[in-house]
Length: 338
Image (tube, rainbow, N blue to C red):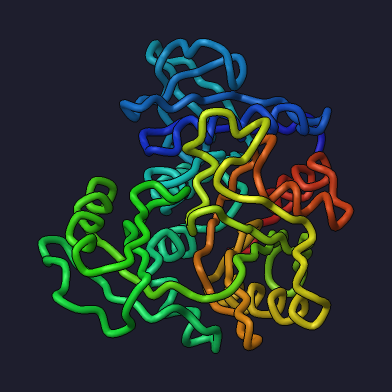
């Protein structure tokens, strides 16, 4: 497609606002010459504002037109800005959870990435585990605390355990707990990000990730990476200078797990991706155990695309440039299979 008017939404009211802006900077560098970007910066207040680029000062507020015959944005003075496709470069809640995807579908605008159902499902780690288990992929043993439920007096799987907001990302609100005394405080910290909390067993094994690009049977995978964390938690997006050094982990691409393990990890990741109904792209994070098991950690339906993010690194290691990844995503969005 030539002269494509691509709406790029960035920012958003979630805790991953800054990560989204950084991802959009890298996207801007990789856009095909045939694309005419229309930048919509979503503030922490949730308002959509036009901008000339990812780092430009936001200007007048806009809203999506819900008339499919006039696909695009409407300005405060009645201006109409037509668009052909959308790239919701948004991470976390209010962007990666199906909400913006629903708006785009109501507006009749095809978009990059997973659809409403897959986005909502993968945003909730406890629901992702249900689907993965049904697809035959192992998940950690876990306990789900709904809103208002207190921390349990004991865990059926012992310690260490990880306490997480069920619907958040980038390790915000995640705590590694080694004894019962720390459980209640960890639940309180997680609830600062989500009323629903997940407590799961610590898996003894290495953390690996798989970058997936495509839809249905036609899937391309990056080289799996491996995280060697310093304290059991990967917090790169919460560090002061992640562009130059990751303090919480060493990231190896490709993962040093051997060819047989690599094949099993890739197969398990693709099985989860398809079972969850993912399309376009996702990063599937897993554990590889010493006794040869691939265990799901989580699925990110709009993984980070920053200069230090894992997804583009894995794709580069498999021979895909950022420009090729972006071109493929735009082509998939232009011919969606939902």
